[in-house]
Length: 448
Image (cartoon, rainbow, N blue to C red; front, top):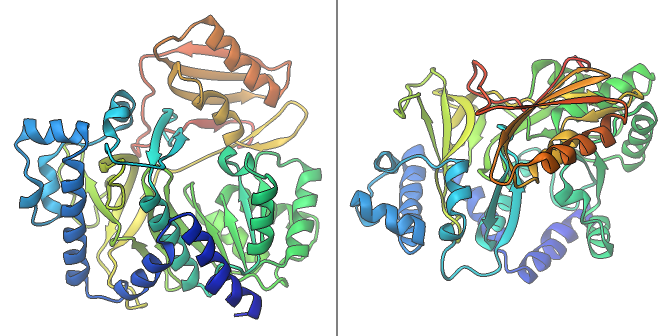
């Protein structure tokens, strides 16, 4: 670890987190101890924290009323299996009861908006406890790979939460932390040349971003004959999408570093991270994971089930038995790293396509998703790019959906794809799931 990294990780970042009233540093230190506990001891910790969450939820209007109707006693919970007495939580329920899901004593809540993999817009809130725990979980995972806060990092991302906050304070913080942000929306040849150059100049210890975007940059550099495996990159951390084998292979080959898969989201939290020995470890200190069949029953190891999560650091806005829409498989093996954390063997269903504008610009699929997901009158959607001149959009109308909403969708998509692109809108009652159980919200037949 360089002197600068040691200064940032040991002083600058902790001071920042203390100023934000986040307990990130203490949580990370505790996690680095608990990860080595036996599975049974981790389960005991998880159960204790689960009871604390449920007791806090009993003071939240929505959960208080639900517990009363079901005669559910949080104090009587003896393990995660007792969560089966509660119904599953989905996006429509949160949208319907969002105000009633806030703890009456919650303060300083941050508002988040995510479309999720199903394309259903969702507004929810996160408290300071949740932020600190999520950052600590990611921090622990990057340290598995010898990367600490303050090491040079290049982030390839597309969320407007990050891209819209590049003010002076944020820019100064990024310089101090040695983090560079590359927008994942525009993947034209000229921008790709620029991105390759920025990565070479930064010589990052870690790449972080969408697997589709990182593999796209890697393949572009390879086509250009630009070597990228001489930069000293220790790991490429990928998240937010399903990681495909060909993407992992391309990133490893071009950047000369291993790829670490990370699974989670803004709504569900950082659920699992891959260690250098290949284990996909669940953040069990913070998150209870259930894998359920279509009838809501736990699936046995080796069989796929829907991933349902309970985040134990969400007392301000409890996420209890939250349906992610993803499908996973439990891993019964013991990881060679020696950690006692449970593992996922497979995560199915995450996919975000690229799309191609009429002028040939290649963009991340999120560039289209953001057009629809922030429209309150849109309850769900799927975008299918049939050709460079035609894109079809299936829309589940919400309250207030009108011709003005349709016009806004057309304007937004044409602004990204080209003014001459025909946008065909179809109102549907629901967006059908694929065989995997996942809803793909962008499908590009052109990019394919």
